[in-house]
Length: 532
Image (tube, rainbow, N blue to C red):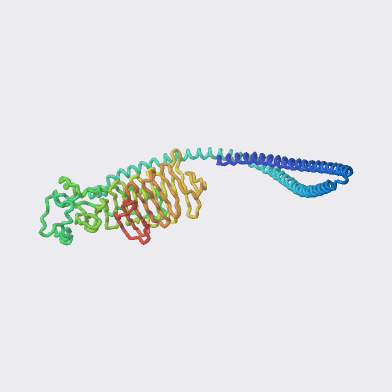
């Protein structure tokens, strides 16, 4: 505001000086022009009068001379004829002079009209100059008022800065116990039984002596299955000889479901963040764990009464799948042909895990109907079935939220200041909020903004695109809720249609200058998937 007031005062001063210079310059030019025209007209009149007098004197003298000649030589008729002819020429010349004189008179009348027009214009300019002077006096009064407002604004800014410092000190004291609680909960989460179960299944592989790589391709389908209906009371197949303990499939416990979260339309970002931090576990295995051998002594670590049993391993069109069963529900672990990994649960929860880097993965909760994407740059993207969309960046104070009605909210962190909030309403209104709730309207048509970490936000027709710092990946969300994420370095494309609970992962390959896409994993059906 201070800068705008100063700029307005400088602009008024410059306009005043410019207007004065233009008025003086214009008046001087008009006066010089009128003076030049009058001087030229006087000179033409004097020249014409001199020419007329000279012509009259020459005519009189020639007549006298001719008369004297005629008197001296009356017999010479030829000379008389010549004199008459010369007299006629002089008459013609006089007629031409008369015509030129009439032309000069016409020009003189035109010059008079121009002179009157210039005088009228000069009068109008004088009036404008007087009006400008009155405007300048008014501007001086406005400048004085603006200076008073500026002084008031400075005092208000000082008061607000003092209040902000108080709020920062109070907030730091209030949030210290909450931070300690979160650290304690995270420490407890790392030792939870569910994470231990997940780690066991994630690190489990069939013993190399029992099932070698590419063995499934030589088995018949009926030889690859272990039917649970054929189990006897001892938990074995009739006539089945148990293998050596080092090669027997281990049994594991499993806690289900993955998480039970039912979002509400008014759930806050903080509550969702706390829930996801407590519930989502990082248990992604290495994609090549099927090729690893299992230490025999590790078998003794499994519980004596496991809830889940290894059922079968089978090779499908997508890849190699291992199935487990706890008596009620099944859990499957699939290694795809592209070496990506998928975990599926009977309660329709699943996890898709990219081969490398290991941080790149997608969670889906069937109960909450929410997708969560974790990126290698520690971005956390959440997509809800109702169209709600969130991005959480590593700073924890940079959050982007798009509601189902396309109302966009940006929480922006600053180096030495409290975070600010930018709100973009669906009706085109945009404003900024500070920690004290002070609202400042901003330009709603800005097409690009850059955050402190170097990431960008691009506003496109009917879409919003978020780009990482080095533009390694981009998140493209259309107003209908469909989301597409492209990772350039990984050459990977992820498509989400939350209304249809649809997810599609595709690998991108460039052949002959054209980009082709090969399906990695698909869950659900979508009637209006984004076109390639």
